[in-house]
Length: 66
Length: 564
Image (cartoon, rainbow over all chains, first blue to last red; front, side, top):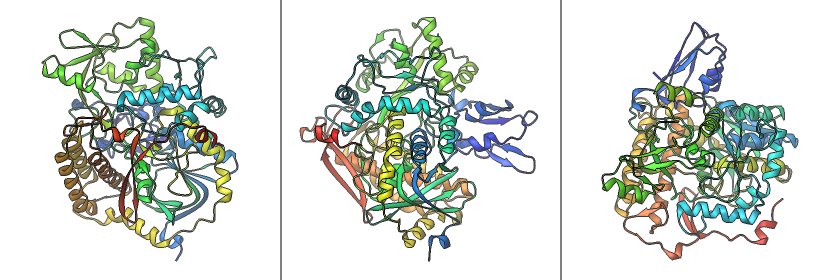
């Protein structure tokens, strides 16, 4: 998994959904939460991780990059 | 019928800018300050998009150490020739302009709110580890350059269309009159009528593989530029009939096995001290060229490693500040992999083509105007002969500062509804395809063609076979691209651009029957003297591809004097 969200920390501000350069992140309107809709498009730039005000996003490098 | 019947939204504007990266934001801010109605169209979000999405640690060139404009042109050409061999590849007036306007661009950048100075209030010029000579590169703390520039563009009054991907330019005869686009979140089809159109998108890379090896799923993991680099601006210019140049010249590089996010640039910057290169058994070697790398490999001396462990502690600290400025996540990735850049060595892998960068792009004159089409400009990486943020800044500022003269003289843009309808069909077709081909499938097949049939070492037979296969793929699978939603439409449109530009790339390589610099033809191993200073120019005319070889002009008093 490229990005994971810690929904306990997430305040639902939507910043990651707004900013992702590759449009990897979707939005669940009912739960007001981000979803990793297109994680195969992620290029691991860390924009969401950098911008998240709640530190609720983690990015893991998959084994194929090690 | 009017565009309103065909489009979900229609915008009318003075200046449309395609691409909201560094160049696009500078241009938007400056043109809007000049009182123009500006519409900035960006595929992602201008706050974190483009090549500097996560930040930037260096900015060049800036006039320093007594360099003259002419002196910089010589230095620029020497750098180009170090990679591409003897001769001129781009119009020398471009580096002349970049140097000439650099101090003005520096002032303007500070005025727009960018941090250009070091903590002590002074500029910090980096020592040049590689090329010697004058220090022209600033180290900058630019982690937030994109949010700052995006805000500058907005507060100057520019209208920003985020998540909007341009499909194609609209033309009326030889004049560009705007573009069509799709909203990549809602799928709405958009028409933008503009008196002036500025292309400010990034480089093109996605016809070659990402730098990282061993991927299986994450095919977008490009290394030092964002994976959005599908050449949208190049492709739009080319299809509309504007010339693009040097599509035979791929930037090339080594794959750095352990350099997962850490800026490769730091190896050669090293704040003045060069990295060291070793064979696996510890023999120090000079920086390996492609040829030298092959020799080492054949002698069984690989892997080659690159190390910076000889740098003093304070130099490592400065480099760590550079990671913060350019890509903060570097620390996290290095830490998780237990990779310490201070002590560990990086493994170097094969040398391979990466992307189309410095000499490649839309051909422009010294005012960044396309000589082929009226009403069209190109700046930053999208223009031929530009590279990096300093050039993007100058291009954006020069265009933004002067475009009002052309806008006021431009006729009312006339939109051809037939053209809009045709582009709409192309843009939205993947939504109604069922059981078709995923864009990533066609994209990967295209990358495979480039790796197998073009690559570093080219020959006639492979290039022809690659061209044949690519055209077969395009004919067969282009119309079968499938998109489930608006996000998928964006990937399908990117794929169309990638396939079109790959065709242009292969045609350019086939035509060039010589070996020069990193352009290696195994069947033509000598430099062709009749191609000295000659460049490949390509464009579309009435649906037909045109390829011309012409001489690049010399730097002359006349070319220097034509600027605004």
